[in-house]
Length: 589
Image 1 (spheres, rainbow, N blue to C red):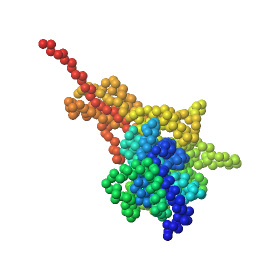
Image 2: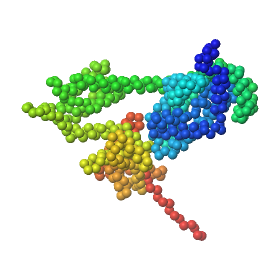
Image 3: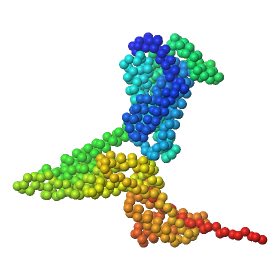
Image 4: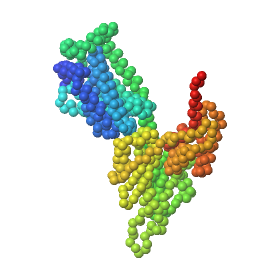
């Protein structure tokens, strides 16, 4: 009764059921050139959209992707218990995924840079919400396919955008490309995240499509008869049927098991993928909670300062906040305030601020810390207008203007990413009244960034600064500085060795954020005491010539060091020069 009512309300009669079943069956043909062109082009557009971080381009790839048909065919096969349709749909879907992923890997291998954009990251951590979206989208897509194309046909583009089947596949290809050419661990993490999102969409759409087709009773006796007649004339279906008939168990698989068995199978599959999806959802909830707490802390810190510390007792302005940040470690909250002030704050005033903020946040004062960065401005008396004169706007000082300019540049370039494996360690600003602003990016890498990537980085810098005429250049510092070679069992530094050490010190003086790691090696035939002796030789040279003390052989603590300490490392190797073998003349006797 429900099936008849549901089909009648959707306007899906007997003729339409036969048409839908046959259309889905015929759409799975492997020799349809237009289908594979759509797969290739949508994969290419999606991959480039992910690289360009362009949602508009990615949406275009979603609209032309033909993968929805194969997934709906899976749902119809499970609803009707059609083994031949299930096998054809499975083959079509596997080949389509392989083609899309392979094409994405090819495109990624040709790219001069491989940055993980926000659009890629957004598809590497699917959660339960993605499963729910796919369930709804599969149901709407199935209804839109079955209903006569009148007004509801416009819902098909919306379904394609909501499910987004092609971008996750291209994320898999992108991750594989990164794993092959750049970073194996990071690439596999990206690929597995994209694969989980695609599999989630596949299972959810298949499930809801199966339920819709069951509700419409699309597999009645008349439809099955029409489908059997059609298959006798369709070469691909005949080939698949012949292949299945060779299997010993085909007689028992006249249909794909019983209906309860098919439902149980798909429920088990959904249950399996719920575990990683639920874990991602909990992680997302924790991140949102942390961000909300950080926003509350910043808001409270700003409000307490503005109410009680931003003005003098007579109401005259004393300071204003130019920047505020918070960090929390081991349950201790640190508030960093950068303020422009006409009168510095005493330690007692800072303690009072901590007490008031602790009461506002409901925290013990000992679990709060304040880092106050004060930028002095003109004195309070100078800011007051002279008697009998028209008031004038207070002029900004040179120091204030310079500080504001540097802060703006720091804020704009804070999260600037260079193509891997390059790592930006510093930048230099040169401003002149006769030439545009010049910015030189100093980066650490084993190789130069190629020309195309440098142009993209320069455009990104100009865009961030909103300064199209800025001149952007780049300077590379090699991670591996070279090797100091001692004669076997000797401790004297050669002139080449001292020149290398001098160059190392100059680099460290110019770039103080870099860390130097010197590794002293020894040959098997050398005494163990040679290592500390050579270390002492290098230390004495650095102390006598440059007044610099560097612990030789010390390595960075990778667990407790800061992010810059973990990565910005220069390496210098100390080794022995092997003596050349002594040539001997053969005995002529």
